Length: 81
Image (cartoon, rainbow, N blue to C red):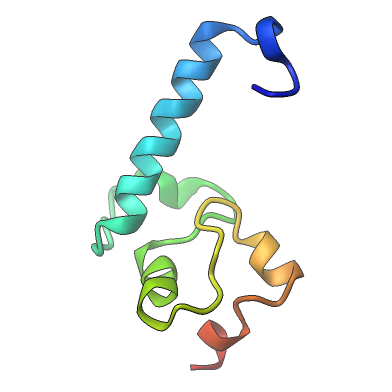
């Protein structure tokens, strides 16, 4: 939205906001829903991945694009357990 500004369509903004809100609720729910559509997104994290962030207060910052955690090595504690 910052880059495109007024050239971004209102529908795109609403769809993106809705998707992020739903994904945030899914990631913070604490449950692993087998029917969650967010499990189909490549590099997406699940509730277990993000719960580790809240329980240990280290790493696992990205719940939507976990590839960044891998690139910056901020999820090494999660995978070492």
